[in-house]
Length: 210
Image 1 (tube, rainbow, N blue to C red):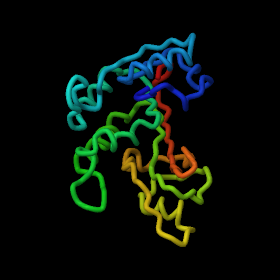
Image 2 (cartoon, one colour):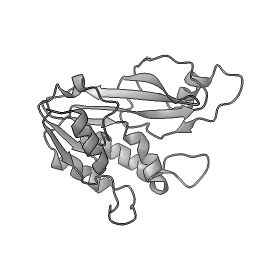
Image 3 (tube, rainbow, N blue to C red):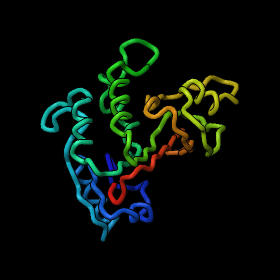
Image 4 (cartoon, rainbow, N blue to C red):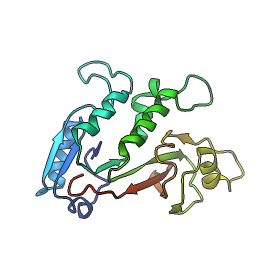
């Protein structure tokens, strides 16, 4: 798992299906909580930074080469990205956002997402992440799409029923596997914050580890 944090949103019934869990997260407190929550599971924790920057200094730019190293270091592993990709825009804002308005992904972040899609080819993997967030509840219910829709279309699906314009925050997580079917879900994080979350998965020949 890449970026599981403490695993608050991960059910033990799901994780228990795997023979071994490789968890990659730099947070030592997350490791301590995770291991206490999922006692008895075969877990290896890794503190490597596969996104970019130096943990001992200021964080550097989002690194495409380090992404390749992630998949080289775990050549036979099924991957789960549990809402970590939607955090990248906050962690690496200077690398992720283009300099012009309105906010959109930089060419570098588009290339990073393309590289991620390439590394995932032939692997078993699953991913869920925020697409859009706003203070108003979206109209859409949990459901499936046959492929990705762009952020403007998704915002229209979610908040087009309202009489006022909604300023939705775009996590820029589109474009990773645009042709795959996906599940849309609504998460109310707090009374005034609603997230439209999407999830995708692919089952290949890899099994037994995540």
